[in-house]
Image (cartoon, rainbow, N blue to C red):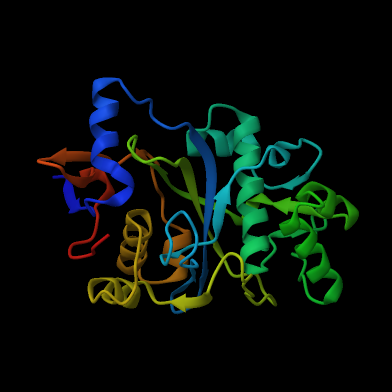
Length: 282
C-alpha cells in the first residue's frame, strides 16, 4: 500500500504545478543524473550531513554525501579499478556504460568534496589516505571548479576504486518537483585511516548516526529526513551490522514517488515497494 505524506500547501506552488502538468500546461522539469553514497562504520553508524538552511534544495535536511553528475565525470581516461562499467550499468539501470562510469565517478568525487573521504588508490594498490595541506588544496580546487576530478587523480597517479562501491537503490524525483534527479545510491565502508571532514558550503555539520537512532530522531521531529534517506536508514536498521548491509543481495528497482493534490492540498505518495518507515514525517 502506498504511503501518503501531507506537504506544505505553500511549497513552491506545488499544487498548481501538479494541476499544470496533468493538464499539459507545464512540462515536467528535466531529470538530472545524480549519485549518493552511504559511508558505514562499525556500530553500525552511517555518515550524515546537515544541509545549510540557505540551500535551495532540501534545506536543513540530514542527508548522505552526494550530488549531480558533472560532464567531466564521464571522462574515459580516468583510472578505474573494479567491476566494469557495464556491470554497474546493469545493476543501476543506467542507459549505457558511459552513464554508469559517470555515476560511479560522481559518487566518489562528491564523497571527497563533501566529506574529505577518498575511494581511490594506485592501480592494484591500497586506498590512498588524503591527509595534509596539499590534499586540502586539491580538494579546494575541485570544489571551486578550477580542476576536474580526473585531472586530480591523474596528477597523483590514482584510479577510482569502483570495487568498494556497492549499488543500493535508485530514486527518481516526482514529476511535479521543480528540480528533479535520477539518483543512484551506493554503500561503502569507511576507508581505513581516513577521517570525515566537512565543507562549510555543503554542510552545517557532519554526524555519525546509528540508523535506528536517526529514525527515532525523525519521528520526534529532531531530525529532518527526505523519504529516500528515511527508507535507507530503515533498511540499515533491519540488517543490523555493516557486514550484513554490504553483503545484502538486492534487486534495484527505480522508486518514483508522485505528488497528488486534493482540494488544493498536495500529498507526497510513496509507492509500496519503497517500504517507507511508519511515523516519519517529511
